[in-house]
Image (tube, rainbow, N blue to C red):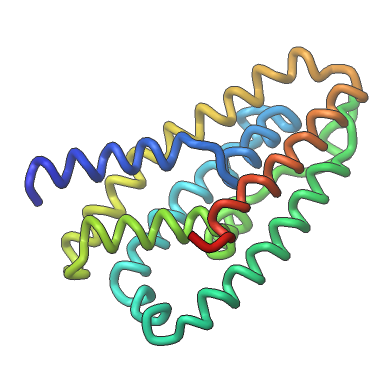
Length: 199
């Protein structure tokens, strides 16, 4: 890869990893509700799950969408349904209490990794990265693209979790936490609108 391509890939990975989307909004909510340490498995699941997704998309899954366009429509329907369910779970999460460990649990590593496969933004990022920066689908190039995303993605999502953690200071009131969770749920639903609508 040339220097220009690597730079372009790095900027794309940075911008797409930092901008709001289902992963970042859910991690911000997790940081606010459960703290940074308890959200680490969620963060690792997002980062490693997405890195694996880019790799698998690059070595063959992209051809499925090209051969069967209806499969992408089906993916959108499944993604929307699951994201609406997650938004409802966030909106109805139990308020913080002295027994916070008993009132809810953060997303696990496996849940977060599997979530990438129904995350419309993750699919858009993966398909764009592979199509633009590894159009030949050469294994070495695809692995490099996935590695760049893996290296950049984790610190970016960590920032969103940290922002949620900082919000804990003002979310000590159960009503404030309820309002925050409802707002995060609405933003989660709104974050999928651009990738689900025709361009």
